[in-house]
Length: 219
Image 1: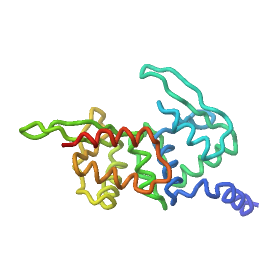
Image 2: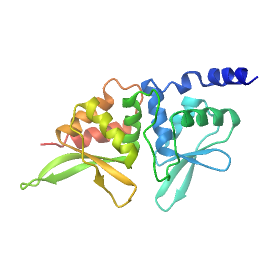
Image 3: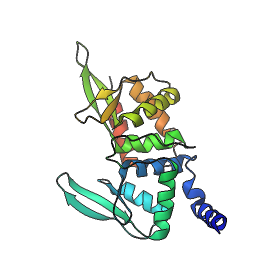
Image 4: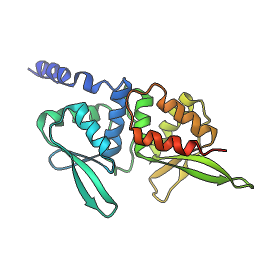
């Protein structure tokens, strides 16, 4: 009986759990960066409704997301409670070693994943891009800062360095003791962006455009 149930579960997951693909890993990145646990299932939350809709479409979830209001402004939320949807999302998260967003230690996902897809989602969700003035001449320079738990950032640092051919970064402290930042400026910002979006099958067009606009201001 257990063997039959496992086969049915594996069949149910099918391509939805194919995190070795760009799109599958990208959706895993959305889950990794937005999901929180409720008593009945999971919440997917973000200010940009695009991510909520992407998760819905990927898993075929029929319930729609809705707006909610908080001190930080409007947020869109999707509640996953239907047994079939919950089983798939839970299996994917547990397979890759997910821990809740506020856990003291959050790791980079284990198992076979397409690193570029996962990192692209994380960067879109948890980074900032702006113009910094550096050096004695205070030259305007595009800057990308990626935020996350130290353990997760340590692994992501290695992945980005090897894949985008940029030096390993020294992790920067933030106001939050458990959160650090990876900093890429000028040509390293350009190299990371090129790697993230080259032949990408799934990404947020608005986020991609904003990164490009900042990078275009380099001198």
